[in-house]
Image 1 (cartoon, rainbow, N blue to C red):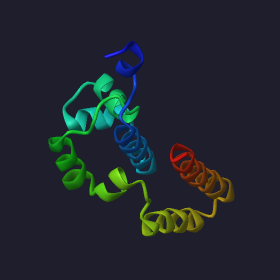
Image 2 (tube, rainbow, N blue to C red; image 1 turned 45 degrees about the vertical axis):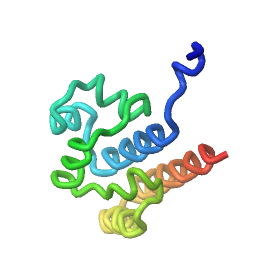
Image 3 (tube, rainbow, N blue to C red; image 1 turned 90 degrees about the horizontal axis):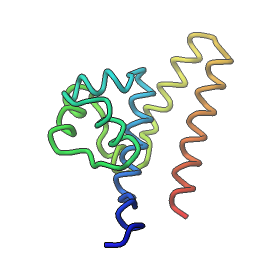
Image 4 (cartoon, one colour; image 1 turned 180 degrees about the vertical axis):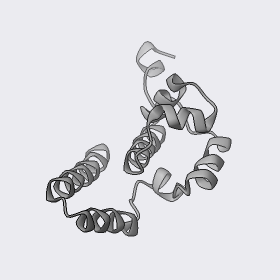
Amino acid sequence: MGKGAKNSKNPSNVLAGRNLRYFIESIGMSRDELAELLGIERDAVNKILNGTNAISGPYNEILLNELNCDLNFIYGGVARSDRLINEIGMLEKKGSRKQLKHSAIRMIQYLVDILDSME
């Protein structure tokens, strides 16, 4: 195995890590809190979120059962429209246009990142 191949990341791990990062950010969870929930070190969480390591089966079970995380979103890369609509609805009720704008920009950037990774 060549040196370049050793450093390459599995694209599905990268996608799952990016989607998990978006999910925890959307629910206001920190990397430290995720590490504690999963029972692993923060460094291991960072490796999952940056796509170096895969999300193992036991972690999927915790994400699903403890956080009600949509695993189709994590592995499929398509955000559930109801989640995005609910987030926008909550922000509109709070009346903060600045916060709504920031959230919308973050969602759009996330979708652009997914499209860029498909090229």
